[in-house]
Amino acid sequence: MIRYLSAGESHGPGLSIIIDGFPSNLPVSKEKIDEQLRRRQMGYGRGFRQKIETDTVEVTSGIRFGKTLGTPITMNVANRDFKNWTDRMAVFGEKPEDVKEIYRPRPGHADLAGAIKYDHEDIRNVLERASARNTATIVAAGALAKQLLEQFDITVTAHVVELCDVKATEFPEDLAALVAAADESEVRCADGAASAEMIKRIDQAKENGDTVGGIFEVIVRGCPIGLGSYAMPDRKLDGRLAGALMSIQAIKGVEIGLGFEAARRFGSQVHDPIGYNGQGYVRSSNGAGGLEGGVTNGEDVVVRVAMKPISTLYKPLPSVNMRTKETELAAIERSDYCALPAASVVGENVVAWVIADALIEKLGGDSLEQMKDNWSQYMARVAKR
Ligand code: EPS
View 1 (tube, helix red, strand yellow):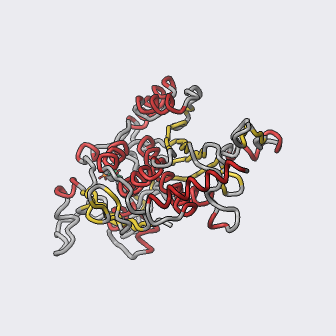
View 2 (tube, helix red, strand yellow):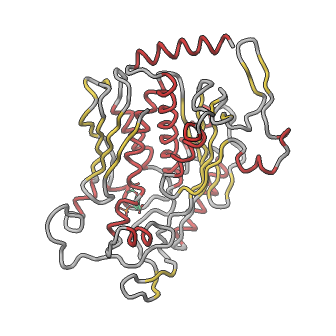
View 3 (cartoon, protein in one colour):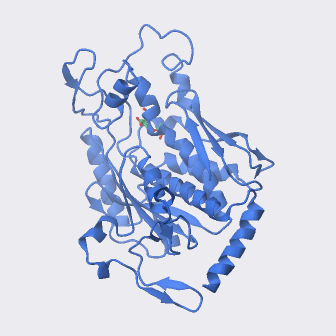
């Protein structure tokens, strides 16, 4: 089992994550972690903040000479913007007299419930941690997970399939071509025509002081049969994926394979016939999205994730001043118009984390060498069935 604890405020000194349970002797590239952090910062529709930040990771434990030790790994990502917030976000000292407090919660944000739950007058105390800035640490963890999965030829990729009312309809079937096309697109959408339309929708939102969300798809290729389990609800891999993805800021829905569409069809149009090709079991379709009974079935794991539009609106919705109880417009915090392309990168890394967790659970092993031995043995058994 791998686990992590993360910490950090959006405009505080920085973000941290401590990871426990990674096997020893895994070669780790800092560049590959920084690359995922860089991808997370990209995308059309981001606000001014990304011009300030160039996220990179500083590792302060758990890695020696480029390999994991099997001990807790600590990673830190500095907030470059903190230098502009040293008075308002000071860790110690008195609150400055002129500090601008926030009393008007934004509909859709954690502002209202958070301020009541934790007894904060100044909503900044809530939004700093609720902020999607924190996804930088999750991505750093996912980037590490990806490096473990690479050792077993398991790849995780993501692309945007819908943005507001625009749907991608034509994208390459070949995975490498799909990824290349998504990488080319400013909205990470592999359908060129839809991409252009999506950009227009973001411009429209920006002009109207509004925001847009959408749907991205994550594809895991190379998963062996047998990750996760049907034996206990909390061991089901589909539940674990959905839980992890739903924990990303602004995510409101997750579907696996056909997802909600399966509910509209007869069973014969949903389930994937089983064949045998002399080497293993094969399917002629993948409506299950690679998961049956909470266990991987050897097909691609396919997950689609819905992100709501960001809740900070430059043309704000009505809210209530929590001090005076008067109806006022919600507060405006500097924000993005659309963070869907970034969310797809976050989702990709979160899925990598969950799959790595399931792989470690399946193969056991305190070291990479033990994992590889167990992999060979398991794959040999699978081949005999
Ligand atoms: C966010 C608001 C914006 C985003 C931020 C998430 O930050 P700021 O208020 O500093 O402009 O840019 O996302 C990031 C900083 C990031 O790195 O993803 C929010 O309110 O959630």
